[in-house]
Length: 216
Length: 226
Image 1 (spheres, rainbow over the protein chains, first blue to last red):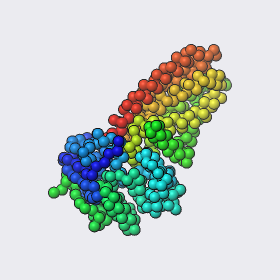
Image 2: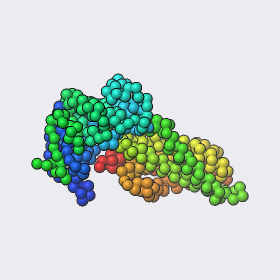
Image 3: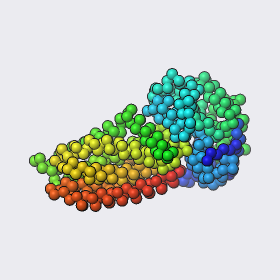
Image 4: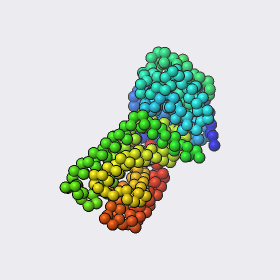
């Protein structure tokens, strides 16, 4: 049963790892068609927050709601509406660019796999390199491919962890354009970054995490 | 139908990577052969092997090389954090588990294709006199070992000491499988092969398979949730 939602709402979300509190009563709402930036120093809790929003880890306390759904009830159908680009790019270095996209299109049970693979490669500017092994790609090429991997199923919620890291100015502009088109398509985009210059004129909201808490 | 397709998609991906790198199959084959060679020098005196040594060495080679393959198969998913992408995908966790398990079983089958004739040759062991029973013991034993191993390798993928922890956790739990495999094989290698005894051990292995696969399918989702 497909599910959809138009808002992500985190309420008083906390997460501890052993004795360390990574997040402390964080509340955040993001609507469809918006880009929200999560700012903060290393270890502030940004990646933990993204992982909780992605359903990859559970909050110790607090609630995460995707429209009317919570993560437990949403299950696989909810995960099908979430795309994530981590700091590690979630690509198989031993596979080609086309094989990576094809594999993920299949695990998302998408129709028109080859059409989506071709379109993704074209958007990433990698059509000519489609049959090349990913381990031979530059960081920027991998980043573009990873973004298309995260977007191949047209997710409602797109989570990006430091997406501008290691990109040159041309690649940054291409990424900004891709994020704007995802926003126009109605995605809820949440990204973490240290690089405030990269998100200038891009984001609709920005929140700062300090030691696991939202800064006032 | 979707479930089977998902299992095969994961297995096919693992096999595609392996055919390209040949990393796991070559290292495990080399390791298993080295293991058999070393034991052959120790247990074969004046051309005569110690009684029942062949059965034990065959299963030790399978267990050791299996541990190597399990660790490496999940190390690949850790390197690019692709395991997180798989866990985020709308794929049933049991399908993911079975996909990884099937890939490892195919790799171990390839290793066994080499190791079994090698043991038969080095230890003058009549491993092919009862091919169906021997095949059954090998298949059931490998499934039991890999079923537990796949679960633990997945559990430990983010653990810092995973290379040490995997054998420490895996061997005590799979000792019954190894013993059943060794005793079943030894029963077939007697001067007068004891087929009823080998069948009994095969039935025991099949029982372990059902228990281990069921428990692993049941626990894979909770253990993979952080």
